[in-house]
Image 1 (cartoon, rainbow, N blue to C red):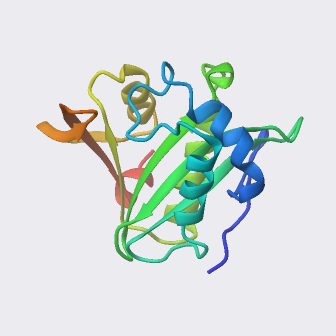
Image 2 (cartoon, one colour):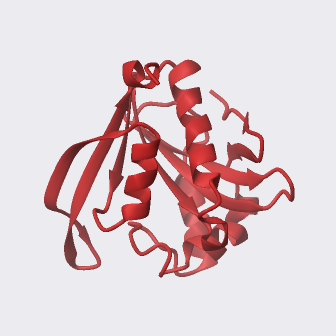
Length: 179
């Protein structure tokens, strides 16, 4: 399946491409605003290697897809949404937004439209997200979107030689339909 293009009032979600590598590197290499991320590129080549590993097909079980988040007003790439299609019924998602574009409702708008597409067009049953417990902004975001916490795994992720906790939040299609 080809990547869909999802449009909202202020944003367009589309497949991330090699042409996006400089813009992606610019916001993803910020070690302060991305301190809770599992991957921070050190070079533009790291970003290109990462883009090369992203699935070219969308909605394939056991694959990662990546949307670029584009501002409609300027065409600027301001972030991305990762979608891990765990199987045919479940998806894990995550969002990274450039520091200069945080706090303006873009993540909420982008994720809301993505969640709607996953449930209403692809008929997914369950969406999950994994968040570092120190990342209170992301926790508050997913709670506003209707996710509920399902698990708190203690010291379950080894990152930079440090064992970190992991919170898992989920939203079922039946819960999405109820609000």
